[in-house]
Amino acid sequence: MERDKLARLRAAIAVGIEQSERGQVVPWTPDFMDRLMRQAAENVHLGKPFKDKIIP
Figure 1 (cartoon, rainbow, N blue to C red):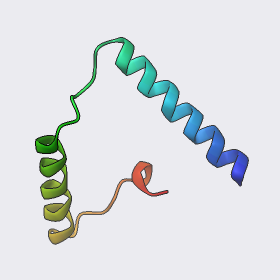
Figure 2: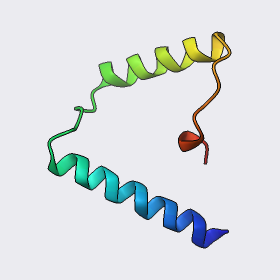
Figure 3: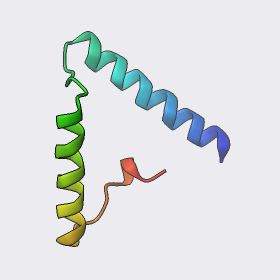
């Protein structure tokens, strides 16, 4: 089970590195974090399910 988690983490990191190298990044700012939090709260309020990728 731990090996599976480690493999998923390594794969996610590799994807992030590839996206960064292609310039597919979003600056991490307080405003960006606020927007993410508002969107998450709205999704919870609407009863939208979480994506499997964000559940640890």
